[in-house]
Image (cartoon, rainbow over all chains, first blue to last red; front, side, top):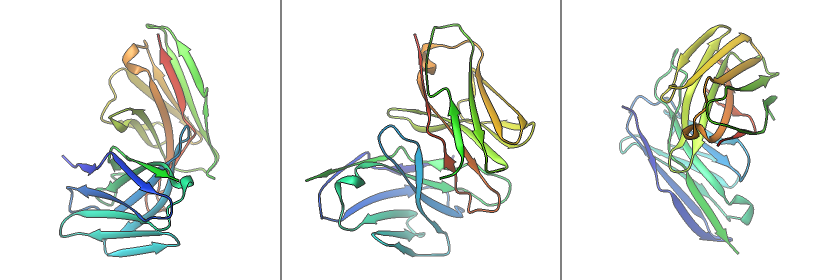
Length: 113
Length: 113
């Protein structure tokens, strides 16, 4: 079945860039998402990219999509301690009536002062 | 923030007792989801609803039932709680008009002793 994989942990220094990677198996994925979960809270949509795009930039966030390799990445520029959280990659396998997302296990980002 | 509330926010119960968790939305979104989040397992879909009285199973539906009699409310019931159902439960909603973005509630922490 469809699968989404991401590394479980990432540690960076404050001010550096963070890159969180995700691979997926379903080539028909229409939308691909990055969600952020802060401690004790629900998930919050950070950004998403449509499958016909290669890159999307939103302030400090850059999403890169390599459809050939089925690889999605999230780059956070000038990482701050407030960026410490769990980041989930998710994909929508196909359009139409299937409204279930496929989720990665989440990458825990630790930002060290 | 999307108008999603979950109740109760915390619950401790004993094995074998029935438990009902409530998700309430004020966005009039058609799709609603129940997830559980456990360490090492990420988010797993329990059940989802695509309209009033229209529900379907997710990947971990055994031991859970749902009901949706109104657009705004989606109830998750554990008929006879077990310790393996100790988890954090999240409700989410999405609109067919959006890019399948899911908006999450704050979560319910359930402990089954």
